[in-house]
Image 1 (cartoon, rainbow, N blue to C red):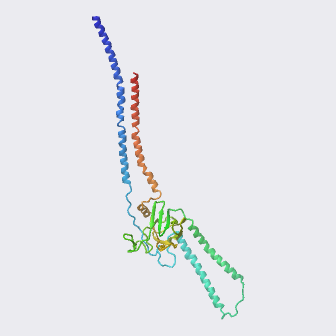
Image 2: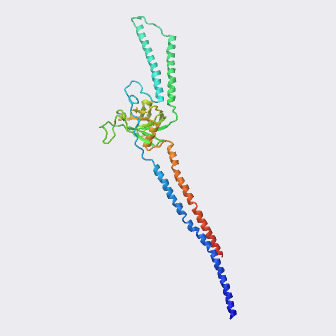
Length: 382
């Protein structure tokens, strides 16, 4: 009996030892899942912080964007007004005061070359006619001369006109060359003649303007804008002027409504006059050197309201021109690309931040998963 008791005691001791060994092995495997599972809960909040900054960053980016959003530009008020005897017809005999280089060159050619030559020729011819009438009248010269040829006279009346034409040709050809060889344009405007109004398009600025004659007070429709002295003279004032910067080379591409008739765009103070033909693009240019308002009109008989197609060009400083462009919701050349390039910058920064913050989440998930798989495989192996 004692032997049996000892045997059972020994067996129980070995059984407890095996259980203890198994128990010791079980806790050893248990920490692995615990360690593996621990990162998983820690990795779970990772997307939350990554997602949380994204809206915050987006909100921060949106807030400056809202702050930087351009407010509505104030209404443009013309800084110039019509001047007396400049840019308007004033009844003078001669050419209007010119404010462009081509106009000044043409005026010099007209005033100091053409007019003196014409005047001199007229005086010489008048004196010759007077001398012939008086000297060779019947009372003073009863027997007429029978001379038919005179070499010297024939040489003179042949060479003198040639020399006169050469003198006039040199400045005339130079003027034509300057007029039809424009420099690089600073502003390009497409001018379209309709029946019976003008349309001005600024392709580089995204502006389209329609210009109509302003009616006299009491002659327009109810609520329609009417002419005032600040707008300009009668039959020349318009509701929308062509606005250009002073000192800028302005290229005009002139045409007419394809379904309309021929017009002619002209501003005397600029020495500009060119036909507007349907289906054809004609080109001219000017560079106004003095601020002001300059008037012209259609110079081609174009129908019933031909006399009611005035032209008004407003020449202002560069700063005022930029204000006018802004008031028309236009953009200055080069400004739009810069703004477009600057606009994505905050978004790019936000994207970079978002990606930087979101990147750690996948590695955390992968790292948490990998040990779990390894642990499970080890556990399975055991």
